[in-house]
Length: 238
Image (tube, rainbow, N blue to C red; front, side, top):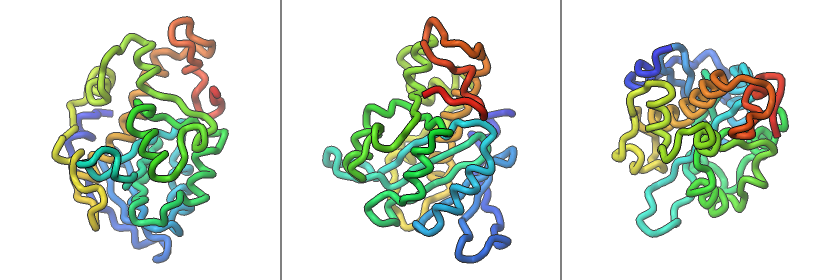
């Protein structure tokens, strides 16, 4: 798969009228059949998670967050939660829902058969989840892995996510400050926001999968102390 094709191609809206109307989710695609679904209602969460589960070929679910720019420190709440397998990404617009996280979403995040993968979660993401929903990593996830910690243990020191993606996947940066600082609570997300948000989650997972492939021994690594080779569809390291 050429990740430059994925990162430089605009999302394309896909007809989703075959689904029942009350479950119909706006659907977009990136190259190679990567699906993106936008979820704006709590009663759509279960169907969206079913689509994500059906796409999963391993236990990894990558997660990312977006929020409206903080012009006053830590005042904005989480507007978007991205969850992704290798081929399917959900863009869950929490800014359109009730203040608490839907029960189905919490159950999915806490599912012990999943390994939730973030990047530098302990910085802004943890604080935002605490502020927005009164929950942090310990409350949200049964199994969690931070790609930043894993990559640093493997020698990728001092890199942001965009630089790590470029080094591991050979993918040109799609990051744009204009998009990252845009209004994530807008009435509808723009094509550039859809692409940016989806790629953040999708490529986080794909970097991990590449590192896992290169680091595939099933035993604990003496360097990073992670059982990366065991994180496939049949086994999860706690």
